[in-house]
Image 1 (cartoon, rainbow, N blue to C red):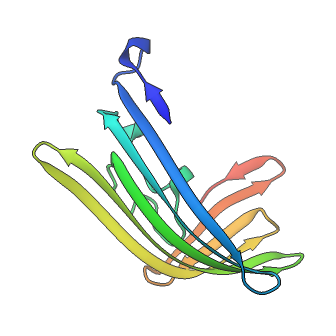
Image 2 (cartoon, helix red, strand yellow):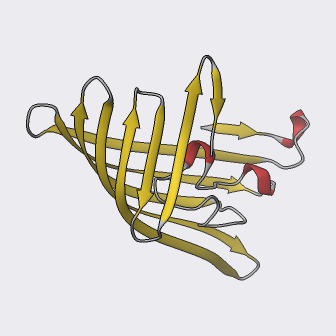
Length: 153
């Protein structure tokens, strides 16, 4: 939960909260099914750079950057399922399915955007996460971490 009061110098007063819940099931040795979701709500009028976006910390596999809610939202929800197979010592392979939505009130109506995808991916050496969204045909390299340098593509 984040609180930004205008009295402390911010250009708007708002309260932002996020919650996430996941459950992991061991299926076969070295294989895991994970299901879960995230949701968030902002009360007040945050500046556009403080809204919820489905990139960065909230990036989902298989979605183009800012493909959902290019102007962000004050409400978001996402659900996902991931089946992973460990491939020691290289990392793990996985398949996934996910759906996400952003909503934001504008004047007397609400701007909504949602999308879903499914695909395959690999986590290499616990450092590089590469996935391919089959529905959207989107290749995402979520995170690089080499020698303390972090890069996102």
